Image 1: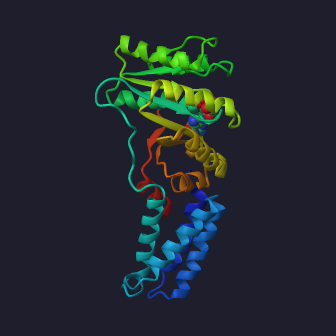
Image 2: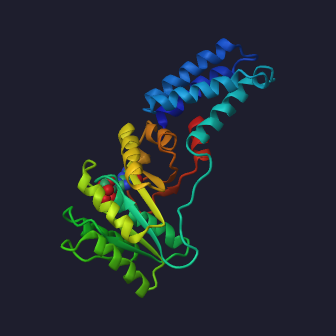
Length: 296
Ligand code: GDP
């Protein structure tokens, strides 16, 4: 399960506080030390941890908590609220036009789960009465186009491709024309990924962005890569000014460092979480529910 390790450690720390009547500043200090360790072990960014513990510690030593009849529970509530706020508090929707064709550009490193996410997003949008079209702009990875076609076929969503000899900018442009002609109202562009960020790839993504003016640039990152995912998000955001992040493979991420650091480090919200390999395994990311899940 996601956050397993963090959840049990934080719950343990909170249990100790809840078991006490009055709390002293020393109790809070001890608890904050445990919270700090738990977050660091979960691979949360060091700066994020430091700020988190400072804010929570200050709030917990305030008179409302210390003089309350149930101080332990107040502390749990503060930790819960701050965890939720760390992840962005409310869930954020993707930007779609009320009328006309919306364009979503999916970007990210190879293997992050971009193509799978294209299928998941198309499934999600169709449930919301949209008519998605998937556009295959990854012309480099062998079999990427085929993979998208297989995904599209399995969910009965059309896939537009022009093979691997046409420039991705031209494919994207033609894909939007195709959507117009075929009454699709959301175009999901599956772009190329590399194993690492490289300049050529970024230039290509910038060119596609400039040409299609997407309503939403969603960065797909693998949550299991922890702080690497955060670094990837920071770089993609600097270069492309992304609108949101999709965290994939959260089902296998026992730590949670990426989920807890990305919003704080980039300012950009996590909008969806991938929680399995199937095309239905997509969740809208709800920071508040995620926080409650961690604290049990
Ligand atoms: P791309 O290179 O970014 O297009 O990545 P793919 O979509 O091909 O996904 C890479 C691998 O990750 C595939 O084996 C997917 O089945 C798997 N995958 C994608 N999303 C998830 C997820 O949310 N959970 C799990 N467990 N596996 C996933």
